[in-house]
Length: 521
Image (tube, rainbow, N blue to C red; front, side, top):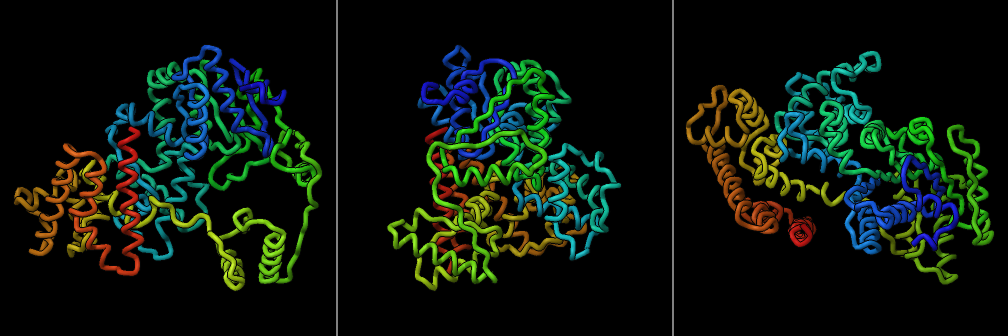
């Protein structure tokens, strides 16, 4: 495979032991280098199970995994940092006092839990939304700050004074519900390795070669996990480019890549400067602009693809002028034989799409907006998953809150919160509490439950128990189908005729996804 690489790429791909930093400019084939290095290690006698490659998107990880398998007929662990965290914690989180079947809360679940904390702490300021505290919590976790580590001097606004107590209670409730949020997947992995060196030693022995793509985008937690894993072997191979560091707003620290040689004395540095994507005019302009950056490694991109077209800059007097100019260019390229599917319009913020869409519609030019709401963020998917989470863990209060009134059972927030407090008082799960209240084993003091509510709770408990039986005897796809049909959810979404077809398609896709998982698991 290395015979198809240029000289610098070959040096990087055939590197064996010790730390190596590959400074890979845009379009220089950096992803191919990671793949080539993995293939080279296997060809030189390293067992595939001892190789761990980490990247930042599931798509990149899947493509890399498939390419390596095609070239070597071996399976190598290639995943995102968060997937790595899940894998390690599913195996070893019991050392931190959690069960291995912990739940993973998404953004919506986390915000609901924060709202619960706010209510319990009596925070009634309507200007303060849960997402404000979620942002602060995420920022703290990416910086590896526990609630007790928060520096009060850093909290400057009146709203922030609630943050330390919110963060503390939020973490306590996550543990009570046997749940982690997305940021915990990294922070908990770091804490696991710090507090239990024998666990770290196990993974250090298991993965002796670590490769990381897009190293300039690592945050404090990701950086620390990498340092921990290679602290004995120093067999770390990172690919990145400080000039492409654009994620500081979500915790990425450019100094992680800039300090690589200091972190790993004797590290080798390879520069990939030949660009295979663009022509010289674009690269010359990029080189000229980026040289004004202060924190960077010196490199100069070049190409042998020719000069290419000159760069055009247009300054419109208004945003409508800009949209009109873009439309004119689209029509011109189309008249010259270009396909619409070969054209793309970038804009800085989502709000700017409206004018572009207006002028495209006016000119009857078909288009597709890339992005929108993620599949797993769609309401109907999160609703069905809430039922499945309750099947998995009766302690998941956030999923209980989401699913108890699907369909409506007349159980209000006040009653739900009182039931939760009662469950905590008796130190049992919310599902067990509901079952004991219905059977009369526990009398809910201070909680008035009407006959209709009691019937609703009994129906809900019966449904979850039935789904648990399905889980024991049927494949995952059957469980998902049952969670859609047997809960009454299908009739619930049917009530909205305008959205029913789209929502039905989505829940059917979830069943298909479960079937795919069965076939590949």
